[in-house]
Amino acid sequence: MSADEQPSTSRRRIIKAGVVAGAGAGVGAVAAAAPASADPGDPVVLGALNNAQGSETVLVGGSSANPTLALRGAPGQAPLRFSPEPDNLLPTEMPTGSLAVTTEGNLVIGGRSNTKAYVNTSRWANRTVAIPPTRILDTRAVPTSTTYDKYIVGGRANVDSSGRLKAKTAIQLTISGLPDVTPGQAQAAYVNITVAGTVAAGFLTAYSAQLPRPGTSSLNWWGPNQILSNLVEVQVGTYSNRPYTFTIYTDSTTSVIVDVSGLILANPAS
Image 1 (cartoon, rainbow, N blue to C red):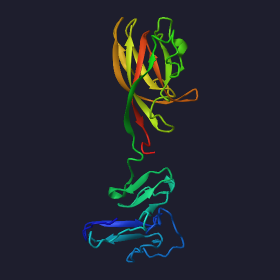
Image 2 (tube, rainbow, N blue to C red):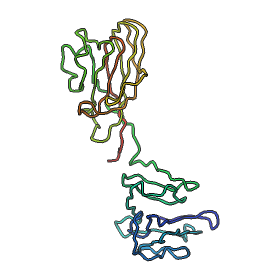
Image 3 (cartoon, helix red, strand yellow):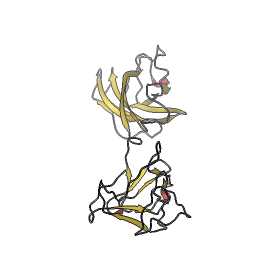
Image 4 (tube, helix red, strand yellow):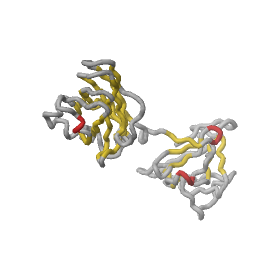
């Protein structure tokens, strides 16, 4: 890695607050016995531990042809490695340009005016993934079929003999059997919710099964015998020890059809 910098307008800082530089050396670990070769005015020595013993090393100037700091690791080894530190041990203000990694795997950088910022990387960012549309509920079939039983984790008894979800009741569904739903990844799902054979005006709410019902609606209708649908992004949670679940609550009796078409994943690169 090389740094292009202008002599008087830009600086790279290597901070002792848990920072060590060198080929294959850890960054973020304090080495108390290391030589203080990174003290102000001293060079940063490649291949050796460099510890400023509490002060900052300011690197000024340099270019791509003659960089102030260049890191080159041995073949097959990273030129720069970070040793994780607990987030509560990192300073609340980090000098601009400094870097650290927390034990949770988050990259932290000293931003403008020494602000401590967390960097969103592809390793930790969420990712939306389309999956083959899958129907996980049609209450019209529930009284006579077990087709959707593998997705129903609670509230099956709230479906009446006509295949409608009773007024002011709920049913809990899981997406755990769908493609790309692996442990620790799915955080939410895109579901198309349809009501059919409505009895009277009402509304429906979709929400995480481990949270209290919010005072909002996901779909509304205004009379009997209507067919309406809406695409909803719904958070998943745990219900009766079953992961990746969400709840469908209806204020008025109606048949409910639920199709899943996408997932929101965490840690997509794992």
